[in-house]
Length: 283
Image 1 (tube, one colour):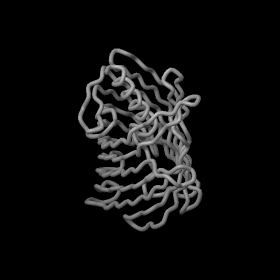
Image 2 (tube, rainbow, N blue to C red):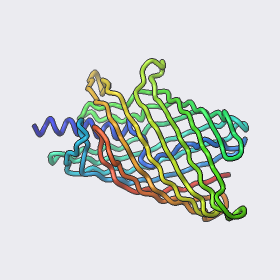
Image 3 (cartoon, rainbow, N blue to C red):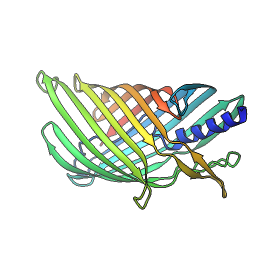
């Protein structure tokens, strides 16, 4: 019983590290950057958990789970309608179940893609994004766990913004961003993941910004290739994650952001709670 529970938890831990997005989710909004204008965001996050949601969405206690992650996100305007997007990260996971400890430390997945501005006018933007997701490469021979397969992600983005009151540049501005994405194998035959990202924000001034975000995702069950000839079954997962953050512009074109995140519901996924810190730099 204990060994089967331990094996089950290990597979869930594997899923957390590779099939679920980075803790402090970073993604281009629907508004593309102008041509030749780059932006870089560096995020460090720490989360912990003592519960896993099982296949019935009920909580199961574990000894401990902790995750540390550093992620780099970049976007560069190539033309006024086309933008490069890239993302990479490094993570470590320390997981204890039934008194046994497992430690992972490796590169997370890397994402490279292009975003095309379909529509843009005052207060409204819509874009389409296509990316290649490269395997993070986690490999632990004791557990016969290997990395996820390389994939293609297709994403649609829609955003609105509106000035609430006051005169520029001190007036309040609210905005929201809706994104829907699917991940496929490289032949576009099989969908492995669905995701919806919802963002609402407000800028009371040029220097301050508040964000509330919800991330909903679902992965399909599949047989995953491990080290050597090992193959094991990974169950489908569901996750609802909420994030609240505040950003402050402490220098021109430079923001500092601090936020808190929690997995509020899920299936076959760790219930993470944590905090993150980000630096945004525009050039």
